[in-house]
Image (cartoon, rainbow, N blue to C red; front, side):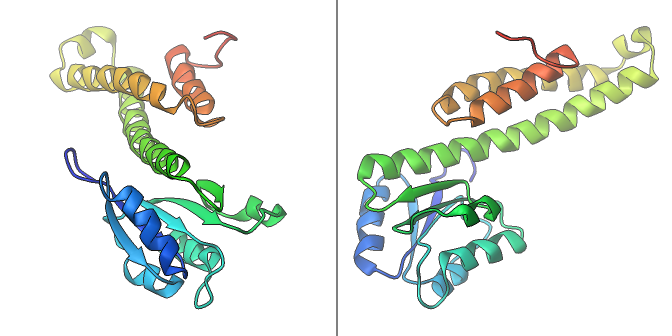
Length: 202
């Protein structure tokens, strides 16, 4: 998803009324692809999908199987299971990002998609941040400060790192309601700033 584009959401459920009802709630804000079964979900899946919402119990191909195929094939979309199935201990081994029990009301549906998109964008920024930070650290290990101060490539890299860190700090505010996620991400950024562990209250 590029800036200014609508995010693409894939909806998969074998009950057409559920797919169509959820699509009607999402379509004003998102580009929605409807799939009325697991196999159709795989057919409609490509790199442009940002979020996939999967029912677990689909007779032709279960949501669990769709999720496994999606991860095995390297798709980077965020996945939520929207299902009537009570979560058992097997969910500990599943690679979904969120899990909602049916019936799912409009507010919960929109909050789920918004949260998954925020995490996807934040994760991409965090990966870029650490790539840049690693290169800065490598240059600082191999060159003395005077040499670094005169090198435009290094200075540009530092500027990019600092700007991206500020952007991530701002974006993190959008994730504060995602239990556990914001705390872990904040610890990661804090550790980079301090070069080690964060103290309580940082």
